[in-house]
Structures are given as structure tokens and as C-alpha cells.
Image 1: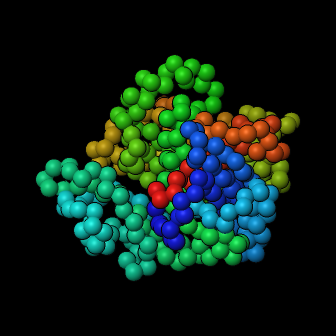
Image 2: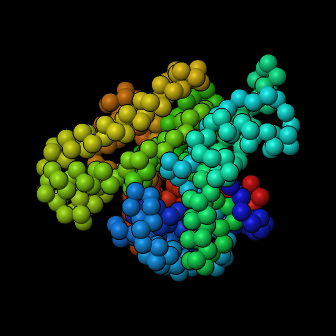
Length: 375
């Protein structure tokens, strides 16, 4: 959403996802009928590199980005990246009906009423969602991000030798990836009947309220959409790190041991105990989902969420999908971002044999790389 130097018109786009525990980079070629991943790389960061969204060791992160680029074999310097967290505000607002040109000026006055920061300290962007909702008014999606956060992120990318052509928002990248998967099929793992059911599901998609939940290391993005329109977007300070801490404390594991459990390597550990810990720790995530639904109901946008997809590093936490489905009485599935793209054998290197585990981690990176030049 936040444009920097203009994106050159090339046939491919590179998405750079800088997470707290892992950096992922994806290059997608748009020249064919279906987007195709042509390069990929990922690098794990040490726990002390980024803590609670704050860069604690700039050198480690820069080195991680460079290593990731070198591993991928990507030749271009131009990348699309994204930010998230409390310094990003996404809100649907109602304004007097006007042209996009007039809205460009009026949005600053409107933002002062909705953004809890000094308006001079934020980068602003907007998208008209509905140019006529009656009473001479229109519906607009307002996006604001603190300038210092955007500048720090951009300078980090530049210092790694890359050019940040666009800085987007994580939740929008997740939505972009989801829509691509939905257009190709259901995008859910284990859905053997998706080709038969897709036409009916897609025709009803504009009426469905779908929750997109991307669970990172320390931030979870919640985006509830209807059709292609975000109805509610927020980031909560909660992620896999909290599950890791609980597993360490309750099971006496070290950091590496708890990380293995998070990734499904439970070994000889008591499965029922692990489930109990995950269930207890998931309350914060459930609360975020419940508050999102309450907001939608209060705004009159939707009475319920029809389905929810999980992505990010937390998507495969043992028992989490089942626990959330039980708690909320609705289907929680794991999003497959690879459903809407093609790739050649060998692109994912050592991860090729376990793409089911890798795929949810690629949601933001693929969503960023799916942005075509000029869009």
C-alpha cells in the first residue's frame, strides 16, 4: 500500500518477508498463464535478532537478508516488502462522496479522526471500497503506518543491498495470497473434492465472511474479508513465541526442544499434556477472534464468520487447528499458498520433501510477490 520508488515493469516480482524468526524471499514470474515461483530462499534468525517486533541486532538481520538472497539466486535488487504490528492502522471509514483526486487531499483530515498518532508522523494511503453507499457518501479503506517504522524497515532492506520498491502491509499480502489460491481452488490442505466444489463455493464467496489468521513469531495478523473487501483488520501481539515459552516452562524443555514441538516433532513427549498446554495458551488468540467478530456484528457488516484459514509459522502447531475449531464452533483450515502458483522441481531445495510444513510460512512472501508491476 505504501509506495516508494516506482516499480519497474518487469515480468517478475520479488517478495521479501522479514519475520522475527525467519526471513523468506520469493520471486514469481507473471509472464505465463499461472504465476510461477522461479526463486526461493529462507534463513532462520537467532532469537535475539528481533524481539517483540523491535530490531535488536541490525547486523544479524542484514546478514540474514543477504544470506537469503544469495541462497535464492535472485538477480534483481527490487523487492516488495511489508510491515505489521501496532504501528500500522487499517480502518474502514465513511466519507462524503468525492473523486479519487479530491479524496487524496481529504484523507488527511479524515485520518486525524481515526489514527491515534500525530498525522505528521504517519504514512497514509487509501482505497475506495464503495463509491456510493447512499446519502452522498462512500466507503474507504484507510491505511496508516508510523513513518519511523516504515523508514527503519526501508533502510534495513537498502543496507542489505536491495531496493524496496513497495512497502505493503502483512495482512494485505495474506489476503492477496488467499485470493490467488481461491481463484485456483480451495487452497486448503487435504481437500480432495475441491475441483468439484469450487464453482459453488466461489459463487458464494462474496457473501461469506472469511477470517484470515496469519500467526507469526510475535505478531498475529487477523483480517476478515467478504469477497475481496477487508471488513476488519488488526494485529495482536501474540504468536508462536508465547507457545514456545509455555512449552519450555511446563515441560522443562530448552528453546530448541520447544521449537521442535511447535513444528510437530513431539517425539516421546505426552501428547495429551502438549494439547493441554496449547489449549490454555490459545486463549489470547481466541479472544482476538472473538473481539473481531464482536466488532463486525456491532458495525452490521456480518453476523458470523463462515470459515477461518490459518497461515504462518503457527499454522501447524500441534492440536491448534482442532482446538480453535472446537472453541469457536466453525471450520478452521490451514491455508495452502502454493495452490495458486506453479514451480519447477528443485526450486525449494532441501525443503522440497516437506512442502506441507513449509507452505504456510510462505503466505506473506508469495502474497507480496503476486503483486504485478504498477499494482
